[in-house]
Length: 175
Image (cartoon, rainbow, N blue to C red):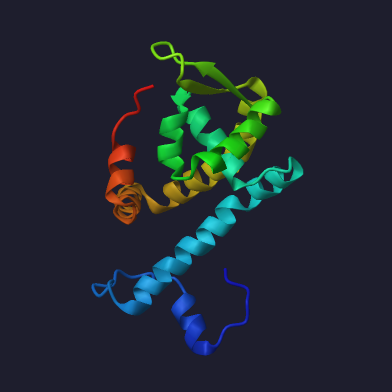
């Protein structure tokens, strides 16, 4: 629940709607969706941020750990595409994770210039710790919302993604 003092008008807009509104494309409803996404993401990342801070890491570290854990053997180029960051940004964070033995780089089997990424045991442990509460939050929310709402959520999230990201998400990774 929002615990900041809001004007009466703002407090009314911030309350979640419990009935289906056929006018869901109105300005107030769209702004409420933006706020819901903001507050959900803030709470979704809070525990992970605290764990990362103890390691002197940030969210970029978490994203790398997550996707390398999700797709063991992912090539660096594919990770760049997923994260949509510069090579320099990835290199800085990835180098730290490799140096501190959270991520292992191996040459590609077909192309020795290719770098394939894997989590070490230390990396797997940290990744599990970072995402465990996030998985529990989704499980509880999914259970509470039901299958139809979960499918609706998935459609909305896919609709928010740009076409390239959506295609990438819907296509299986080939590593």
